[in-house]
Length: 418
Image (cartoon, rainbow, N blue to C red; front, side, top):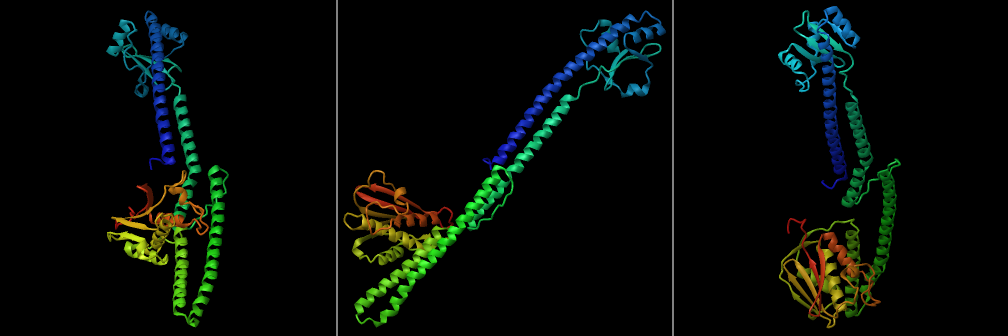
């Protein structure tokens, strides 16, 4: 979840919004301080003008103040209730007499959204002086912040909406990996994700066509292989030589087993069939592989502990058979030693080290030949690796003291038995 692109984009926008909010907070604080200083200056000027008008009688004072740009009226209680204090504290730069009057409440400096007021509470009669349009505070920071916030949220929504088809894409690929069935996305949009979705739909459609063609080919080739075997088995009763008859019977049975084995191996390696897991005796599996290879007992040196392993027993016979066959082909003495170490099966054979550049990975590639062997298709280790991968098993290799060692790790962490 922490690697999700949706989470990263969300965190980016959250951090951006927080940073923007902090920036606008400090900007608002700065603008508020400047506005307060402006009000202090305007109030100070008004108080100075008011001090000059003290020597005048009331009508002349009104005229003088109006000439200076101030309005003079009698304070109505309802109006006073609607006004707020313009200054949070008495400015230090005001004259002492004015500061004392402010502290004693004889003078109050008030404001509303637009105007500045000086209220002379002890005058006879009380006066209210008004300086119009000086208390107005600009709302552009709040408007800009709201606009940018809405723009960021809209941009976030558009990006998430654009990326949301990724979830559908991931779901389709995951479903195909688990069930082997691909659900087409069929997006008609023009963005890059939609282009990828359509390309994937096209590729999967071609892949399904190829898989169907392969199934049809295998079905036909298996049918063609079974037909001569069936004809041969029908002709067996007419043979008089019992030894020849026995040899042919074993050959036909082996060919039938190989065909059935090849079908199941193909199904498992292609993902069409999951391995049927059950408890297997390694000794029985090795003996079956030995029988399929027509090997005598003196060729194999078995050192098995008898600990069972959990796998598809029928398919694992193919793994052991191919590893035994591979060991015999490239053994310098024609012998194979098979050792069981708990749930790991090791196949040893003597021989020269591999040539430079030859690795287990290259040997497991299909149609790869370690030596020029016209009797080998180069599929043995490829099938071994494919079957082990389907079981979540592992294949390791090492060369120790003149012996090649292929080790099958029959441990699947996903199985409760293990």
